[in-house]
Image (cartoon, rainbow, N blue to C red):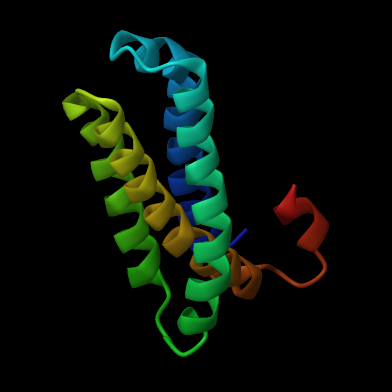
Length: 131
């Protein structure tokens, strides 16, 4: 396995670990700012819908950028800042703003990450490396 793939996988592992660590606590966190179940579900929906749309838009833009590793770094930086921004959330407006920030980070990271990973795979080892 190439070292580039190992670095990509490590960055992805750290990102998923942080996400999986926080995700079960999200509803509890949001309730502490007196967010209703509707607000909690809506903020999560805003994140997922915005991420999907941004991946389509940003993916087209990223096709014209030759060095995608800088986009991955930028995206993970935005995601890190977004995760830390949850500490500043005091009302539902802040919650939606942080979710939008995280959607921007994810929208930048995903197309670039998958492109770089796909280009770095070893021939004949595709299934193993994707797994």
